[in-house]
Length: 123
Image 1 (cartoon, rainbow, N blue to C red):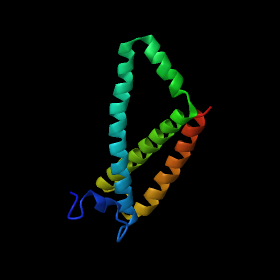
Image 2: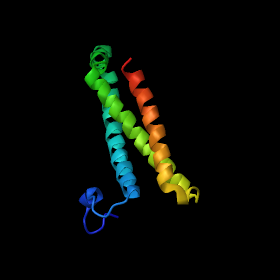
Image 3: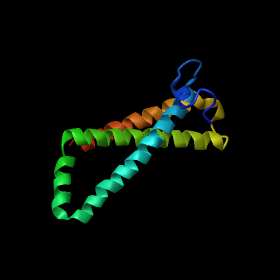
Image 4: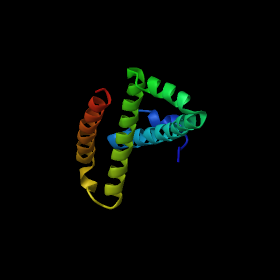
């Protein structure tokens, strides 16, 4: 439900608490991952055009600017996964009183995993 303020109301910082920002981040990450899925399917369709087309794409995909997009993808996956874990734990009645601590713990784990992924991407 978007309410009277519409979708823009998601990003209005007035009167928001940290839980709302995790909701917004989870939604934005989910939308981004859905867009990525369609882009991924379009890239896979290059396989039907023959090995030369695929080889040209693979050469482009190894460029650092392209790898930066992979880092953005990893960040989106981590945000979406952390939001899912938070919703699942709190939805099942666990850690209700520790919302902020849970968010901080998930953020620390997410940043650590993200840094490892970025190092692996660029090496």
